[in-house]
Amino acid sequence: MADEKNKQAPTQNQINIELSEEIAEGIYSNLAMIAHSNSEFVIDFIRLMPGVPKAKVKSRIVITPEHAKRFLLALKDNIDKYEASFGPIKRTEDMPKFPMNFGGTVGEA
Figure 1 (cartoon, rainbow, N blue to C red):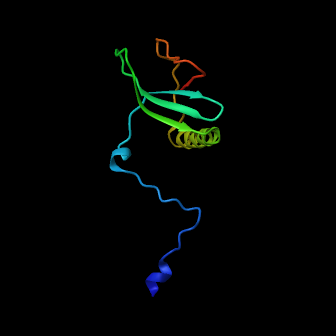
Figure 2: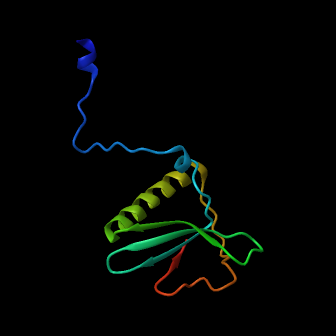
Figure 3: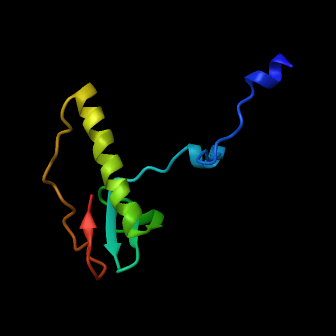
């Protein structure tokens, strides 16, 4: 009976998130390209290697405008916490030297 007291009933807002070993390894990306329509944002995570004229999209994430805004705020919050712990992130103005616009409205990160 003591065990039953310690068990907590799951709340309605609780989500069980599964992370497979393959996904947990992550994918390295050093360039992100962002495009949008009236109903979605498309973020392509790309691996660009020096001296290689062809870059590969390693992952594409499609999200709603509302989730894009939430992502922006969450990323800013995490960057602020990172910089509070480790100091300012240095930013270089170096950009890829070849055209990166695949058409449409594009942002780079």
